[in-house]
Amino acid sequence: MKTIRVDPLTRVEGHGRVELEIRHGRLTGVRVALSESLRLFEAMVLGRPFSEVPELVCRICAICSSVHRIAAASAFEKALGVMIPPAARVLRDLLLLGGHIESHALHLFCLVLPDLFERQSLLELLREGSSEARAGLELKALGNAIQEKVGGRMIHPINVEVGGVLHFPDPCELESLRRQLEVWEKKIGPLMEGFRRQESYPSFTPLSGRRISVCNGPTFSLNGDSLMLSDGQIVSAESYAGLLAEKVVPYSNAKQSGDAKTPWLTGALARLENHGLCGARSLPLPEFAGIFANNAAQAIEMVWALQESRRLIEELLSMDRKEPLSVPVRGAAGIGTTAIEAPRGLLVHHYVLDDLGRVAAADIVTPTAINQAAMETAILNDLQGLCDETEMARRAECIVRAFDPCISCAVHLMRAP
Image: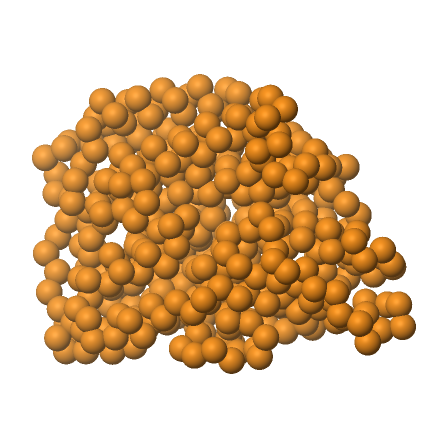
């Protein structure tokens, strides 16, 4: 047996590698090892008052910090039976969309676009004067600006607390963002076309994996109290643990859901496919199959996120600013689970509180951990028949990149395997 190691993986968030096992000239096994240093947030929050946790767990990742903070706050609000004010709900939704725009722009333009032009990095494209690369960075900056104005800070937002939000953004700044979004809505279509064409990508096989996403009825949303599966089944978010059945694998610092025969798949593609199961067709599906359709799905979501962000800003500008932004919250015993769509897919935060409102148990499940087995299956299937080792390594990296992994978010083991 021979092992080809792709180490490190390039143009992904965090540190990882791929190991390809070759027997008698044929690819027979794949391991995707997420080797980022252990991040022990689930242990770190034990014994702490609920009010401290959102600020801590948003530091799991700088890219995904907004969605982690909102997910934690929402889970505690469910545990304590708290309903936040309408303005706070809209501001949180807008903050989520800012993270979506920033993260999708980062993935599509900084990480995937060089593959489409057969370049090693975004820097090469910028040196060549690529208008797409420059526009992608501007779009990423817009997502960051939304997070900064709504969250109070570009990275690790401070405006979200358990019970609501602390501050209403300056209306003049919101109006400026609204105008920028209007401009982007008019010019975003052509920028997304390259990511939506099948011929932009290597050959691929149909994508294995049971799709899982947040369900909010027929409305396409990043929030919901239920989970939808690719067979149309809808289950409560509280059932996530038995459904995903996370386990430790010996070669990775991240838990894994499912297995090679029955992997789970989450992310933009799963969201769009499951949304169609609800009987709603407001967002189109990619016109081809395979994991590279996830890039196309992100491109479709980008258009939606720009439109939805403008709509939410217009709603905020019409609100009475004298309305409360938060409600008082007292510590008590409770259990809260929130399922929310991070840019890369399903994110779950689950907490158990004791009588004083301190964390007695915590569990965080991230999209990349859910997708780990699906990554291995996609590489194994798509690389069958290839013999050139350099090409196999290149294709393996492209496949992993199409999942848009956030490895820093995924490594939550209590100890190394």
